[in-house]
Length: 199
Image (cartoon, rainbow, N blue to C red; front, side, top):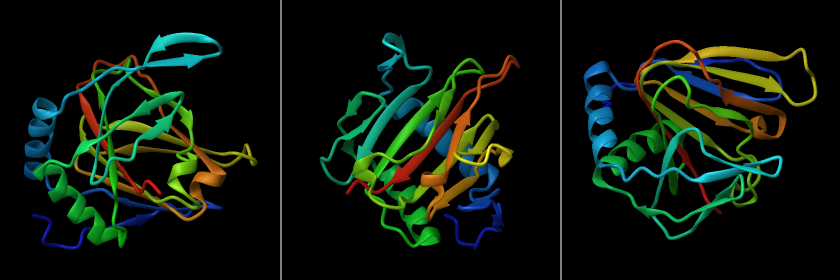
C-alpha cells in the first residue's frame, strides 16, 4: 500500500501551510477503502444548534482514536471507538507522509449534494496550537472552499478528488475558514477522513 511518494501541490496561500496530494491513493485502493468504510462504519447523525434552533447535522459521522479522549465541536461531544485495522493502515501511511503521529480520526459521510459542512476552522482547544489536519477524500469529488478570516479578498476554491489527501498545517486554522458547500447536482456519496491530534 502506498509504496511510492505521491506528487504534492503547495496551495501557496498567505498565512497558511497547505499541501494537496491529488493521487495519495490510486483508484483501486481508494475504491476498496471506500467500500469497506461505507459498510463497516457505525455512522451516526447528531443534532447541531444554529442560532438557537436544533437541526440534524447535514452528514453522518463516526469517531475513532488510539485513546479514549472525546472530541468536542459545534456543541457536540463524540466519544471514540478504537481504530480498526483499516484505519490503522491509513493512519500509518498518512503519519509517514506528514511526519505527525495522529491520535484521532473523524469520519464524515456525505450522502448526496444536500449534505455539507459549513464555514469553520478546526481550532478546538483540545487540538492545541497550530493543529495539523490531514483530510483524506474517498468517493464523489466535492468542491472545497477556503476564505481568509481577515482579508476578504483572499479566497480559494478547489476540487477534492477520490483518493486525494489535503494536509493543513502551521497557522492555517488561525487564519482561514473552510467549507464543503451544498450542490444541486445529482452526485454520489463521499467519505472524508480527517485525522488530527487530540491533546
